[in-house]
Amino acid sequence: MEQVVERAVRIIRERYAEPLSLDDVARAVLVSKFHLLRVFDQFTGVTPGRFLGAVRMGEAKRLLQFSDLGVATISAEVGYSSTGTFTRRFSESVGVTPTRYRELSRGRGALAVAPSAGRRGRVGRCRVRGIVRADAEPGSPVCIGAFDGPILQGQPFGWTTTDRLGPFSLPRLPPGVCYLHATMRAATGMPGRPPGTALFTALLGPLRLDPFADCEVELVLRPRTWSQPPILFALPGIEVPAQTESPALSPAMDSSAIEEKTGREPACNTHL
Image (cartoon, rainbow, N blue to C red; front, side, top):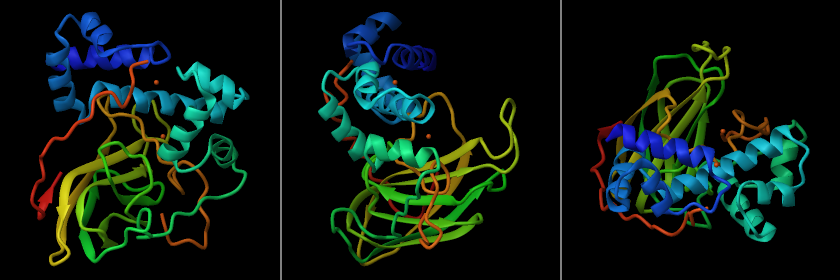
């Protein structure tokens, strides 16, 4: 089963610019689309369509950072027929426009994300607190945020950063369901990677937040693996420069064709 998903992920990463469908990927890995949909979600936490959408945006980020291609050209390179649609989805996922992301990724300007600022005005009285751990020392800020899905994208409900592992708190979160994401670059090197470049991440969710009780969690940061979709949200202090005065706190199947509702809402006092 894992080999099926690994082959499907490889196909998506290699052919992200093509008009792939779920049927195309299922045929390529020699399983039914229903079986692929089920096992893909089990291993990656998202549907093939959402994984593809994240890969396409991740490749767009890479091209914006390391090439001089125009936005319209990049849009076509990653499988979009409309530059306007690409720009809108990129801005929603990454948090800034493609042009602004290119400037930030090249050190022109800085980005701030207000801690616990809420998302679209949704500020509440819920709080998540806990411990963040890792087998490596941080070589960057440790970024922790509450988002609305298992892919690190869009504007957070709440956000914080710390210079060290250990306790953290996310106050003023709205009630409802969220996913906790944590990210850092490790100070020590890994095989094939120089110090300060290896990304460690953690994901916990879905969590249901209650305004009358704190949610206590443990997040364990681990090196990223092949089964994880790209990080889309522009991470201040990790991926792009962060404003020093801010205490806040990286590739066509239709990525919205298959919407998932897992119904899995673990109680708080849990760990990843």
